[in-house]
Image (cartoon, rainbow, N blue to C red; front, top):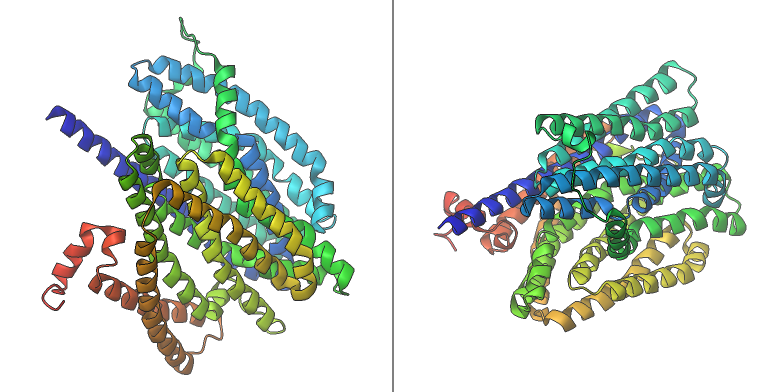
Length: 550
């Protein structure tokens, strides 16, 4: 009885932790998207160039963050959990203290590399001298982030994800406040220099991290862990920290490589697009920056929300997949693969189709459609939304394959994708201009997707028929939803044309609401929603008295 109660408690802890982590991720990404509405408007005629500079800086910064943490925060969580379970919390706190020292040194090293390498990265990106101070403003954040992420991993090891989530939210809130205040004062009350405004907006990443660290230190103090973590060294501690770090880095490298796919592909776009277009066309640097913003920086704010939600939904069962594989329970592993892919499809297909239909008001809410280049901006936005389907599938399949201990194969498949991307990139930019990088990324990622899908099937023997049936059902329901959305969209266009940001927002809420209600109702009636929310779907059917009618 006690064991069952303990299991139930662990399950409750996992649900609570997942809820906090999902909320933290979602709120952070949402804030990271919403700030663009006033920020973009205040940049005025320089909005697209400003966002291109910001995007170029952040892509390089994101890769440095990934390299500077080398997967150690996750390892910290595992080791803290291990020593706490063994009843030796002193070891876990001492270990974290030593790793904090190492991560501060690692952060300093990568911050230095990024600082001195900024002119080279700016030149490769064709961002000009304006990009150099933008990149250098991000180096302080690279310095601090690795140590801060270790503190988050420390709480994760206690299965206490509330501080982790709240630190994420605090970081984003303070970052956005700094960005908006400095952008407003510079663009509306000061010099009006958009480069200065962008530098302050990227420097905001460092300011946000202070808020995050403050939240983490507060929770350390409240949990009586502050003195244990930063106080005197405990006696009789015997841990080979060096060996643990080496082992951790070795384990983390495959996850870093495959997990950085979207970043790497975007950096290839950043380093090749402007330089290739300058060779084949007569566009000015300003026009090339605007185009880069249209196909990369602008859509990225929306598409990353879709990918984050999709992978969060579909990734819930990945730790269980490893557990079943270790237990050699092939049937349970196969069922999890089907469930994960099903959940991804249930969300991502209608979300993308709905977004494509509502592309104009959706783009209008965030950026306002430029009258002189409306067809190009909207066309690239739609192409990026469609590409999201490929990105989301890759983002789910890669960790799934690694959960089955196929790390080397996952890296090899990723490498194949990079090779295809590099081969296609320049010819596609030549023929399709700004559409070229989007098409080449989609085709290049199809290579690892197909190979991963076949390998996962080979290992687990999951039912491909079940995936096909689910896909067909989702497509049918999405088609019905699309008909209603198109009709509602046409009616709204007659009654309330989306001529400004407010009307675009109303258009989006009303027509988007129609899509959500129609798809939700159909998914409930066909019991497709049961795969996503479980027993809650049955409770909804009972409340709506649908069981009597179906």
